[in-house]
Length: 198
Figure 1: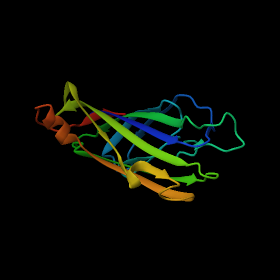
Figure 2: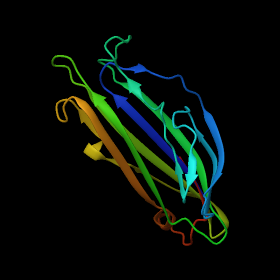
Figure 3: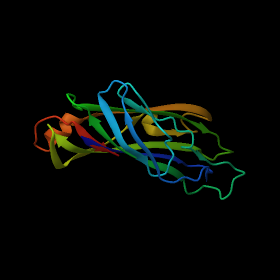
């Protein structure tokens, strides 16, 4: 068992305006069609990820409201202070009977459109911080077995008009969480049937 926390942030350093009003959303529980894992108490703090679907051993989100917009016609203008849009995804992943969680692969993708007037710089920064709490090892409850990591994004998660130029740019991010290594770092042995992440 483990708890998984994924914090995503999208910051644009140009004229930005918050596009959507958001609030905490609970999506419930999901079972993988393969029957290997269950995703429990899936929720996000600002409702920006949108309702997920379970496929294979994955939980897939297709957010359409996770965006920031900074248009010249929109007031208040962002510069010189960047505008940030972020959300916190929290879920528990349980391995079903006879299975364990050794690794968790996280992937993200999106796009950013950059445009600036005159000598102004438009920029986007993408950040994904991940926290994990292992809740059980070999079926026995544990406390204090946790870790954290940062997703790795193309272009180091930073896009700006001075490097990439104006236009739309596709970005991707990935992180492979080694749950066994989190357990070993706590000077313990065994495998995790459950964890909670954010």
